[in-house]
Image 1 (cartoon, rainbow, N blue to C red):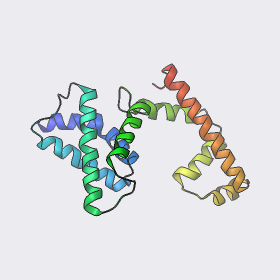
Image 2 (image 1 turned 135 degrees about the vertical axis):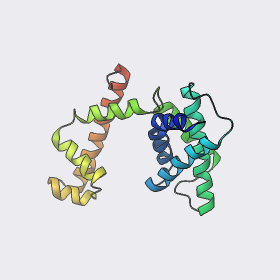
Image 3 (image 1 turned 60 degrees about the vertical axis):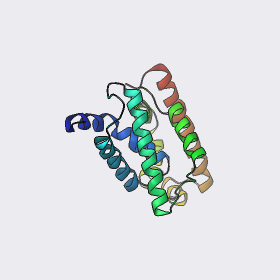
Image 4 (image 1 turned 180 degrees about the horizontal axis):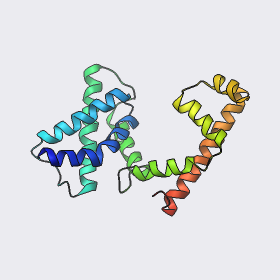
Length: 176
């Protein structure tokens, strides 16, 4: 494989491989390292699927990345998740059935972004407080004038509504 072909693969699959490895439980830094190692292994590999077969190539790259992540976990004697064959197979099945689409999950991300726009300003701010700013429930309650239980209920309703909006967009093909 030449460097131009590799650059094309990186452009197409890097984000999906990164999301997959994070889904398996890797930290951001470890996922970035595993993604890099995946493409280095691809460059060195004498046998890999034809890049024109996107689904086959995506599956093969996920397999390489998964094996590298498991090797990292064994080498460092850490287990951010219960790393065993059964768990990894379940994760792969779940990833494939729930997130993997024609473009390796990008449709889901596009639907999420579009659906966020349908939420109220307060709902978006609460999500930002929890997921981007990583505030505790107590801090969010203080900032928005809710009780901690109120924050818990409100966040559950927001996530449920967001999930419904995403599902509706994906089903209707509105994510593009």
